Length: 220
Length: 312
Image (cartoon, rainbow over all chains, first blue to last red; front, side, top):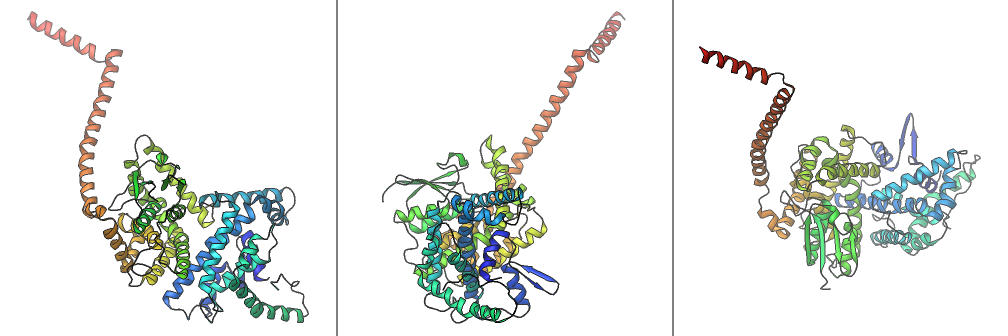
C-alpha cells in the first residue's frame, strides 16, 4: 500500500499503518519507529539533543494542526462529509450498518473537535491554520533538501505523508491543495521524495510479474 | 490603542497569580508584552463575558476566550511579545506549543483532575472552598467530568479509565516532553535569548502549577524538580513579573493555612457534633413526653413519694 493511501486510511480506520514482523504486529507511526529503532535502524541517530527536541516538536505540530485539519475537513465540513467521506467510509458495509457507522464516526470526530476548541472554527479559519502550519514547515525547511539537512528523518516521512495526501486527494474544492502548493519548497520536497523513494518501488513492482496494485496517485 | 481591556481569570493561590494553566499563560503574556489590562480574578466562570475562563473583553473586538485567540487579540492591539522573533523562531514557537498541548497537557489534566487522591485532597477541595455557595456543590464535579471527557477525546479512547497503566503512559510522555523542553532551553534565560516571548508564557503556564501546587501524588513534580533549568526558569518569571504573589510567601502559606484551617475546623466540628447530639436527644425526649411513655409516670411517682414523705 502506498504511504499516501496508508496515511489516508489511518485517518479513517484509526490503527493503520501496521507492520507484520514474524509473529509481531506493530501499528501506528510512533510504535513502528520505536520498533525499527530497537532493531538497529534509526533515522535520527545523527541528531544532537536540541535538534531531536525540535524534530519531536515539529512532529507534534504536524499531528496537532495538519491531522486535525484533515479530520475537520473530512468530517465537519458538511459538503465533503456528504459527498466523499461518508460514502467512502461506509462502502465496505451493507445497509443499515453503513449509515450507523458513518454517522457514529462523524459524531465522534465532532465531539473531539468540540473538546479541543475547533468546533467554533469556520472552514476558512481551518485553511488559515493549515497555511500557518505549512508556513512554519516551510521556514524550517528553507532551502535544505530535508528538514535536518542531508539525511531524511521521521519528520520528513511524516510531513511527506500528510502533504502528499493533501495534494493528491480529490476533495469538493481545491483550495487546500492550492494553499499547500503555494509553498514552493514544500512542493519540491514532496516531489523529490516521491522521485527518490517511490518511483524506484513502482518500477520494481511493474517489472515483477505480480500485480501488487495499480499505479497510485502521483504529483507529476 | 488606549482601549480599556479587561481580563477575567481564575483566582490565584500557592504563590501563583492564577491556578488555571490557560489563565496563567494569558496573564504572563500580557506582562511580557506590557499590555495594560484590568484583571478581574474571579471564582465563578459564569460571571465571565464568554461563560468560560480566561476571557478578554475589549471595546473593539468584544469578548474572546481561549489563550490563542486572546494572544492574537492582544497582538492586534499592538501588544506583541514576539515582535523580535525571526521567522524560524516563530515556526519553532508553533511547534513547541503543539508539543506542550499534545504531551504535557494530558498528564497535567490527569495529575490535577483524574488521579483520585490529588483530585479529592487538593483540586476539588480548593474549588469547593473558593467557589461561592451554592455553585461549590455543582461546579467541581462538572469540571471533573469535563476534564475526564477532554482527556478521553485527546487520547482518542472513549473508554479510557483512570488507572496505573494510563498514568504510566501519560507521565512517560510528559517526562519526555519536559526533558525536551529542558534541552531546548539549555542555559538561556528564556527560550529565544534574553527577552521573553509567547512560548515562554505557554511553558510557564503549564509548568508553574506543577511546581507550586502541593499534590499528594508527586511523580510529575519530582521529574520537574530534577530539571533544574526549568525550575529556575519558572522561579525567575515569578520573581520578575509577579513579585506581589511571591511576597505572600507560598512555602509558609500552605502549612499556616493547614494549621489554621485545622484549628478552625476542630471547634466547629466539635460544636457541630455536640449540637447534633443535643438535638437528637431533645427530639427523642420530646417524642417520649408527647407519647407519654417515660416522663409523666416518673413525675407522678416522684410527686407521690414526696407526698408520702410530707405526710410522714
